Image (tube, rainbow, N blue to C red):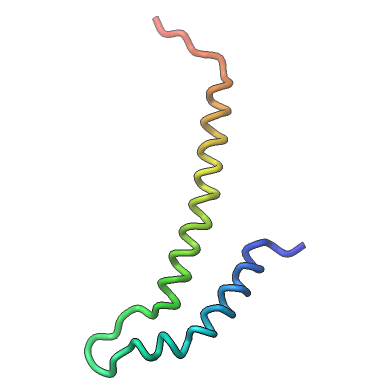
Length: 74
């Protein structure tokens, strides 16, 4: 079974390839080069996808901690 991120990678690659001409039209020929929009989009997408997993893991851990018996302090 393929990992779901591989499927998303293919979809994103196709979508960004279709936007390539649009991105090229936005660039200017002089000045300091900037980060390519494709890289920024990929980075944002990865951050979003992995933060969902991190949020799920944190929530699951918090729920598991809530099930532990309370420790008594003197």
